[in-house]
Image (cartoon, rainbow, N blue to C red; front, side):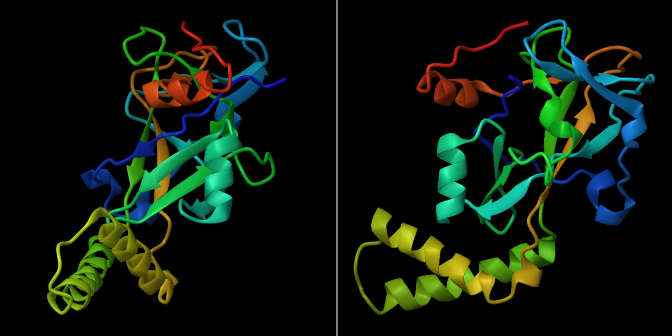
Amino acid sequence: MLLNLMPTRHVRVMCTLEDASQNAVKPLPDTHFSVRASARFPGVGLFARETIEENQFLFDYQGDVFLEHSPEGQIALATSEYVVGVINTAGIAFVVDASNVESSNLARYLNHAPAASPVCNAVLVEQSAMAANAAYAATLKSALEASECASAMKQFTVADAVAQQQALVTKLLEAPEKIPPPRLHMYSSKAIAAGDELLWDYGDAYWEGMAKRGQECILT
């Protein structure tokens, strides 16, 4: 039984210069890694076959991608142990669920270690949607605000904000090529020796959610 549990949380990290061109970012080949029994946890983990330098792009965190507000997204957030939430620069919330082995990749096998732990050696960052797409979303948002609030002459409530976000998503989905789901990159946060297990911090929010399912935090 696989026990490496992925965080139910949102990642929002601005692009670095090396992320400016999505096509320029190349992952390490799968031959650099092996999946085998973990010495720290029940089940398996991901290990380096060769030395990996610090700040090396490892691979994407891949899986089934859903809009967070969709029925599929809500089910993934409530039930999956391999789900990561992402908010792109257009303000659209997605979830990436790596439960399905066929649609996911090696990233699903990384086990947890607190960020302050000396064995924590990997980190997840988001490559956000392009700035032009964010500008497109901002234009739509301004138009929605004007139509919903200026003419209504009423206080802008929380319910109005929710409705505005849903309307924005609907409008953006009319041009899906302008809101490609953001990629989630796994990087090495320090040099990793051949034979070491790759570990990253799932985050407090993940373990808080898992506690409600009766799963305790695993510390290393």
